[in-house]
Length: 222
Image 1 (cartoon, rainbow, N blue to C red):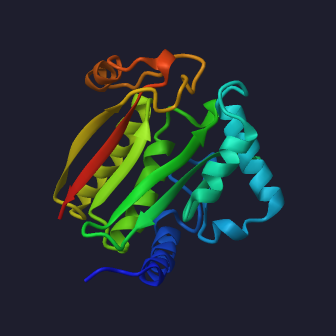
Image 2 (cartoon, rainbow, N blue to C red):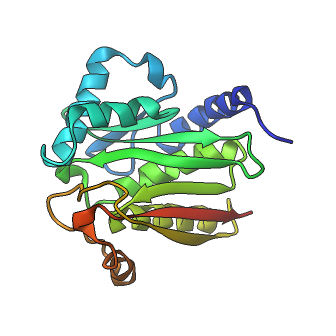
């Protein structure tokens, strides 16, 4: 039986309570950062929206992503998680969209950005984990995203490995589809690298100057 949008939103509400427990009332296991969640992204406060968008612009070096592009990605999200540092400044965010009316229910991980100070400590993997948990509660068995950054793939794989270790999923498979000129440009000032040489080797096949990317599809084994 397919789930409606109403069912998806109800599952999100249930998951929000779970996330409060997972993060100890909004804190992560990183003492300098806290994570908050927004389900009504369309009704987001204008001041918060601007802060999120300015964070996105700064995360992309103020050169490769415009304010309008970041805003569009943020407002397309059904659910969005954002990160504050200990001074209260937003240092990153990650959105998601759900598709629960198809034969195979899925989520799309969209619109993610982290400032340099918030990188390299597993926060992206935690944001991926939080979004995937929302999808699992809504019955999703497929996770999609598009990226030219191997760190994104590595973070999602780390999150899925955590879920497998918990016994929440049995495992996962990954499929990469090469999207030529998908972005039309390189989105970062330098070619990004992850800590995993085998993942970096796959991304070395992309033409960054042309804006190539991968569409990633993770099928969850339940």
